[in-house]
Image (cartoon, rainbow, N blue to C red; front, side):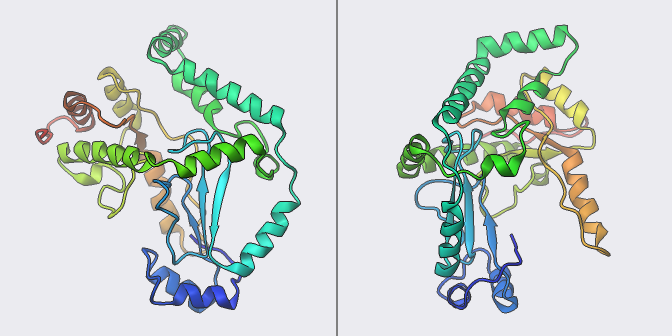
Length: 297
């Protein structure tokens, strides 16, 4: 979270008010004192209609892209708490072109095909064919699953949503079952964490709030860990779009630590309601030889 554009005086007063402590806490207070614009990245954090981001942020940004929890195959929502900033943003937004309906139709067709490819019978065939050719089956799918894969990002996203996307976004925002799905996903991840000898084997496991949109583990040998997981029947993979933010001059240690975390990360294919035996197998594949997993509930 951060930014350099100044919020209005009204926005500063609202954010620094004790009525809105929020999880941002000290960070919001610091931003208010310095006149910073505080932007909260909630791209993967949407968990239902009751969650609108931290009230201490000037702006909370939510994504509804193809791999997000409440996907609309595109689109985003900005919760803007500073009225002056909201006016400026709306004026800029009106200058953007509206997304063409044929572009929307192509996107729907693309992800319908990908959904077909990831059904169990078809995906099994894809994996077998990739192995026969000596290829990694995940690389091609990961390269195409992103909403703007192979395109220049900024021109691609600077569009106003068309009628079809707006209707689907409205449906997603009104849905009442998203919170339940997120809770089930987080509960599954916590059941996995409980089986591991050290909770730090899962990134963010100690966080007070974690929706586990992504469940990743650090490992000194990602290739070996992925091989063990796949042998156990889990299609784990390395992250392809994570990167460390460059550090300012004189503060390289933080950047080295972040880059180290990214290099060691392996993403786990968790799904809500996984059976206990499956979680036992996954935990056993994650724990190095010589260590024991905790018994499941």
